[in-house]
Length: 291
Ligand code: AMP
Image (cartoon, rainbow, N blue to C red; front, side):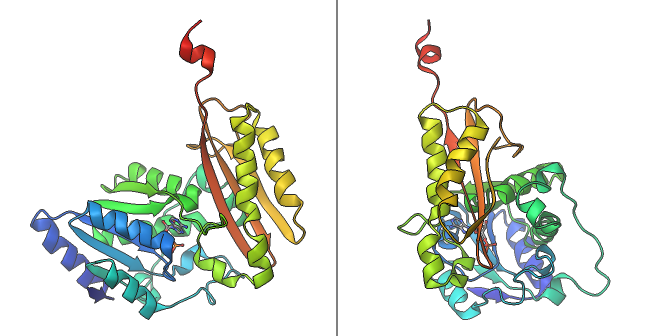
């Protein structure tokens, strides 16, 4: 595995392969790799001739007072995981290489970036979109793999690739969870033992929302209340949002027709956790069987 830190060297490597008609798969990450990242890397490894993983803790997607400085950085462990998974290039640029003096251009995301995570973390998705656009320009992948764990991000990146004709196919892969349902995240390391015990309540709340839908509830507000009832009974948890939304626009759904995404974010002390579930509604029996 090659470790590349320079932006021009990364592009030169990719252009060389592309000239030979070799397809490049790409998994962008912020490092502190876990089984969720590994699942993306494995999917990409199977699907693509060449594979690039990036490790970059992107300062422009962190707000003031957020965890940029203390975000876990464990380069050696991450490099070992990538090597074992057969990654061809680990691209790990410095912040100065990505944002040199004089940098002043950015991508601005529309309405879909202003809701939910975007409302709690203003400017977050503009930072994500800017770095993803830069990484795509540098790595020149054919296909890029993202996790459903960050549902809003995956919607935004798909929109971005389409709106700006980036020429990259975006693939969204399922969320990998701990045995008790907690979605894997680099930030789970911040949880104290007591918080870790409570953390699965977010997934339990989302599951209560899914159960409500599967039992026939179609009003989004009722589904949201079912989720809130579960999560709010846990002391020490602050709900940022629990919502039943349209999976494309992420607008709250007054009434569920075919599918919904249940989005949730909670705080346990200073730690924020996000998660989601996509729920497909079975066709109404009368519709399916005819009159
Ligand atoms: P991050 O390092 O947190 O920026 O995540 C890098 C990529 O891994 C993103 O596309 C995430 O959505 C994805 N990812 C993070 N956690 C998980 C998980 N538990 N399951 C699947 N994908 C994940």
